[in-house]
Image 1 (cartoon, rainbow, N blue to C red):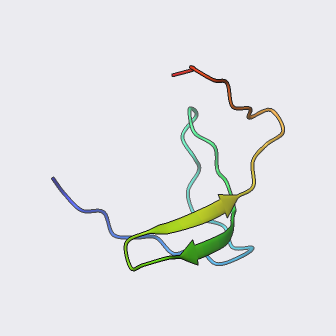
Image 2: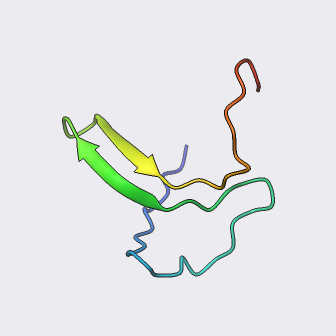
Length: 56
């Protein structure tokens, strides 16, 4: 398995590449680290992106 290098994108900066057609480009608004390996994050999302229970 190959490891991918992280890509840092700063607030308001363009990532430099387009998101694939079957993906959403979201903005991370908050990150909270509990440990060095456990964290949570919040993102923005388009209004059309809705959770559907049982959907795959």
